[in-house]
Image (cartoon, rainbow, N blue to C red):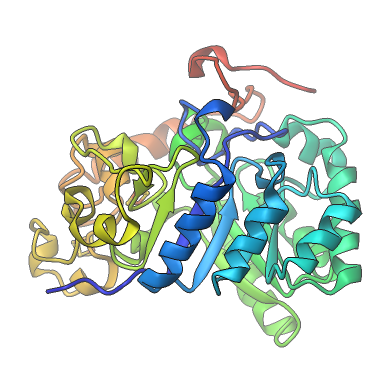
Length: 372
Ligand code: SF4
Ligand code: FES
C-alpha cells in the first residue's frame, strides 16, 4: 500500500545552542557548524516538503536562533506555504529579530521552559541568566500577539513545580502548555537516573493536569506526555514509523524520527543527494518499520496493533538491543523486565548527583559539570 504523505517536518537547523540541557533529544555526537546545510538548500527542502504534502514545519535545533539566517529561513518556509512553528529557548531572539520573524510570517512560537525560577532553570539549562532573558523574550512574544506554546520539559527536578508552571503559562499568555516529561533518547538517556520522575510524582502530575484542564478550559490547552516507563502500553511514537512526519538533521540527513540514527543497521539518505519525495516513499530506512505487517508477536495479534504500532523502535533498540521487537515499555513485551530494572535503579538514586550536560566535542562520560 502506498504510504500517505507526511503531515509535519522537523528541521533541525543547527545543533549549536547556548544552553546545554541534560535531557536534550539531540544525538550525543553533535554536528558542527561547518556541516550545516546552507540557506538555499534549506529553502529548497521547504519547497520540496510543501510539494510532498507537508503542512506544518517545525524550525528547531539545537537553538534555531543560533543561525544568523533564521529570518530568511522562516520567510522561505512561510513562502512555501508551510505553517511555520519556531521551537526555541528564546536566547538570541532580540526584539528586532522578533519583528523580522513576524514580518516573515512566522505562525507560532514554542518556547521551552527549564524551570519556574532562575535558580532551577539556569541549573537545568546550564546557562546563567537564561531564565531572565527567556522571561523578557516571552513578554516580547506576548506583546506581539504571536501564538505561543510553552514547552515545559518536566523531570524529577521540576515536576513538583507543575502548579507554578501552569500559572506561568497563563501569565505569559500561552495558549497551550506542553507538560512534556523527558523521553529517554540522546542526552536524556545519559541522565536517566537523575531525570526520571518517581511514580508518585507522575501520579500527582496526572491529577494536576486533569484538574487544570477543567479549570482553564478555553484559556489554556494542555498536551501531557507522561514518562512512558510507568505506562502499561507504549506511545505511538511519531504516529507510526514513516507515517506522519520526518526529521531533517543539520547536515541534511533525513530521518523517520529524531533518534533513528541509534539503530545501527539502518542507513539514511541525505537531501544533498536525493529528493525528499523519493526518500519518503522509497528509502529502505523509511520502509523498514512502516505499517503493521512487519510487527512481531505479541503485537501482531494484539488489539492495540493499530493504536501504538508496537511502540517506539528506538526505545526497543535501546532497551532490548533490537529495533524490531515490541517496545519493552509494553507490559506484554517479553523484555518488559528491562524497564522494571531501570525503575529499580531509579528508586535508589537521590537528587544530589550531577547532570551530564549536553556539550559539543566531549565524550558523554566526560561531560559532567555543574553551574551551581
Ligand atoms: Fe502495543 Fe504491541 Fe504492546 Fe499490543 S503488544 S500494546 S501492539 S506494543
Ligand atoms: Fe525513534 Fe521513537 S524515537 S521511533
